[in-house]
Length: 287
Image 1 (cartoon, helix red, strand yellow):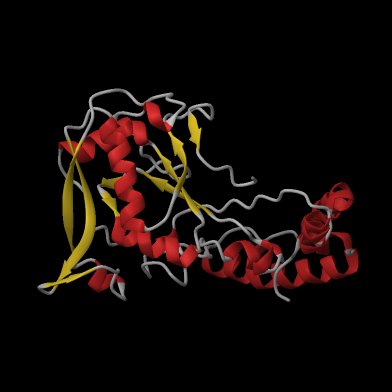
Image 2: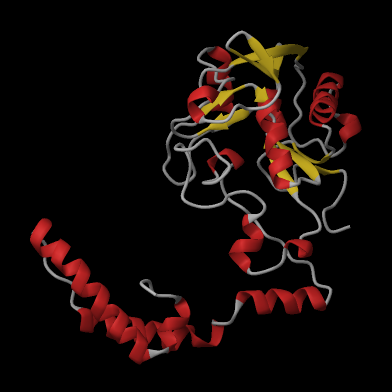
């Protein structure tokens, strides 16, 4: 092993050897290449041993804890970060992150088996965004794009970078639902579309003169895709804080129904504002 795990903090002899080995490697780089001061391996060891003493009551095998919870009939919720197309294996490589962001990562990352996951909720914005570079067929560079970004407060949670915004892309969405074995969707930020006269939805791509209904293999070909969109009427009424789907504007209901029809997946939750109370739950994941 070349890294240090949390459990290694509880094994001082092993920890000392690992820190000394890593410090020797890194100190060469620090002093000879960057001309910085070397790492004091003994000081790091003392600090980490103390961390181990404080953390010891909380260290256990994650898979064992979760298995016990399942056997006791408890509800277990896994939460994933980042979007499907940032997945290192299934995303638009090289415009991806360093890990698996799809639902399968819950099993490989936690130590539970795939059969222990009985419901997958796909979190889907009512429009599409992307942070950083990478293919984005429905990206908008006009007033509509500015509206989505400003009203939706679209800035990266970690970096603060402005997100790129565009119309809902059901071609990419359907692929995401398939990769993640999504049971039901949670449509968020429906209220951001309030006041838009017309809303577009991407239903296919045009690539090299042909119409396709699935994303192509390879980010280079993905970037060449042009969106094929349908138009739907928007709504002027505010949806913020609405608690019943029946109370949503007729055009908003039609928009949500179109998403279900195009994606062949149910919408189980609708978010109508940033507050957790501004949520319409049609089917609870734990019911």
